Amino acid sequence: MNKQTVALTTEQYKEIISTMKQGFSGSRPNSTVATALMLEANLGLRISDILALHLSDIVKDGERYRLAVTERKTGKARVFTVPIALYQFIRCYCMDQNISQDQRIFPLTERSVQRKLKTVCDYLGYPGISTHSFRKYYATEIYKNSHYNIALVQQLLQHSSAAVTQRYIGIQQREVEEAIEGHLKLEI
Image (cartoon, rainbow, N blue to C red; front, side, top):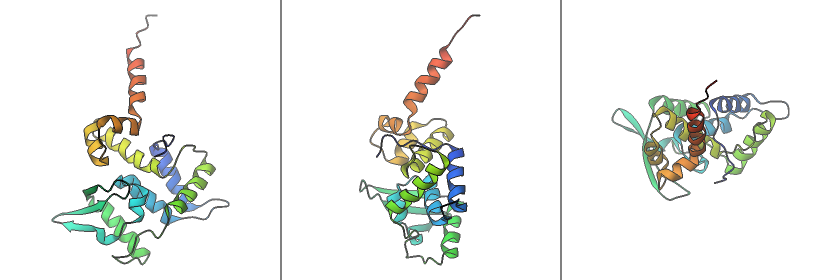
């Protein structure tokens, strides 16, 4: 993991996906790469695991959908619920692209995704963003939306410790800065 990679803001996420889907002068639209990055931001998987997905990997389990993967980087098994709206989005994407249940959803290489993302980020003037920024975005959003439950994020990302997760989403420095700001007591 590149330590210089930053988590996206919601605005950056939306602008990158939108720009990628629409294209711009010198760069054609690419909804396939945009969709792969959207899944990374919504599932928290690494791009290598997203690119290996098949629609058949998501199975109905009672009233929910479940995804079981073995992470390519760590070899760890991971099973989690896929929200119904996300499953439907993926299924519609596959139908629109004529992708069968057993085909890879994204016939892309990591390198091609990284190149397209770099082109879009250079155009938008966003430094320090890579495919991993989308996983960090997922982690940061879960952290904020869970009322700062670092243990939950640690479990979702399968990190070995809360300290690793804190460094990963960069909250230590942010919390230090907020504590200093919050402590400021000026008498005027």
